[in-house]
Amino acid sequence: MNAAQVHLLSNHLPLTIPFIGLVVLLVSIFVKSAIVRRTGYFILLLGGLFTIPTFFSGEGAEEIVEHLGKSHDLIHEHEESAETFAYLNYFLALLAVGALWMNWKKIEFEKYLFPVVIGLGILVCVFALSAGESGGEISHLKEMHFED
Image 1: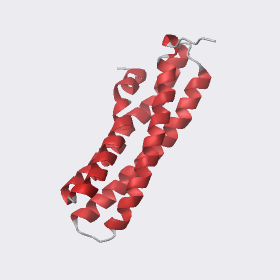
Image 2: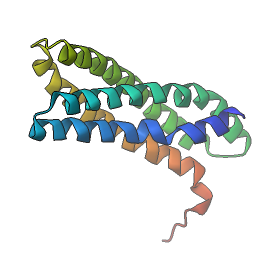
Image 3: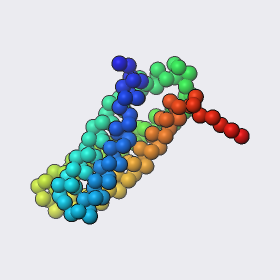
């Protein structure tokens, strides 16, 4: 399996998992459940972990896709957007691990970390949309039809 195949196989999970984790965390506010909150934190951790193979296969996928004649400008735009998304998602995963541990140990500081995780989660979701859209433009460029 080459880098482009790994990239295509793995790229949807890091984009969708933060949305799911964020929804679960928001639900935890209404159901007032520590277990639901821990589940949300764990899902965000998984989002960060699933970003790793996608991130590291990106460079190899870039070489293959450029060789196929895809636009270097589109690839560069996606690379910049995806890199920012990946680093934010890694940071979110680290915060989620800390918050998960604090919640598990009933450390009161977790209640202050929770809104930070929510805020960063929203930012990560915005960058996920940007990275996903720019990546889709690369792989679906032939299928787009532009009319004047």
